[in-house]
Amino acid sequence: MKLRRPPSAKEKKRYLVFRVISENPVTFSDVKNALMNSIINWMGEKGLSVSNLRVIRNLWDSGRQEGWVTCTPKSVNDVKMALALIHQIGDSKVIFNVVRVSGTIKSAREKLVE
Image (tube, rainbow, N blue to C red; front, top):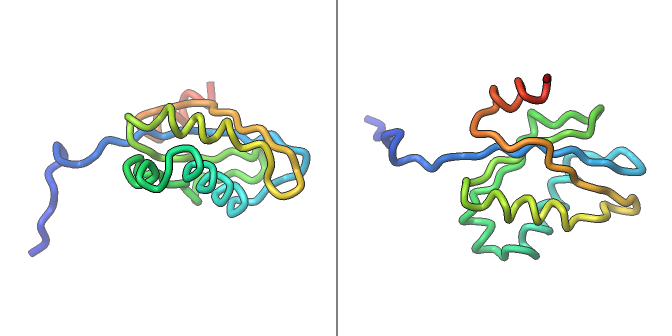
């Protein structure tokens, strides 16, 4: 018998949609490594674990250089700041632009289409 947590005991999530503006196209693994390094430098390892940060691989769009990150609602501003602090990936200069913050993937996609 598997025990499940009730929905009220689960942590809430926020989805951040970001775009990467760069000289050269960047890969998902490069973006993920740069983001994790920036988060650790900004918030520390404890902040990384508290924020429950995840970069979603399935939602990475290499054509539009757009990606999705999940975190807790309390750490949204810290994650935005960590994204803003990334200026270079490899040899190319980059700018991370947070497009949307949403509670669900569905509502974020609807707002991006508009």
